[in-house]
Amino acid sequence: MLGGRSRVLGGRNLGGRNNEQWISQYATSHQHPVNRACHTLGIPIILLSIPFFVANIFFYHLWRYGLALFVVGWIFQFVGHAFEGKPPEFLQDWRFLFVGVRWWWAKIQGKV
Image: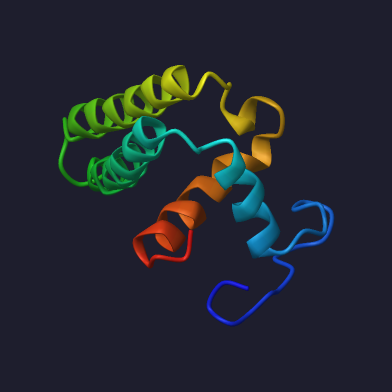
């Protein structure tokens, strides 16, 4: 269990799996050290792009920085999957788009 808890984050939308099960499956397709490194960098870069898109509401042209960060983050992830030799999990199940951040957080905390 991650953080001493094992809970279901949703019913139908998350397939009745708990957080640990989602992260565990995600981790199985991210075994190559280069892929893990690329995701460890790429995921926070993508997250960093979000405030730029939001700030663009008040400060024009920040979307360009957000877009650049977003694209670079995804490039890191796809390069990692080239080393892994497996396609990204979200190509099979879109819900894995939301698991990457949880995997990254668990990895940073030393739980993956």
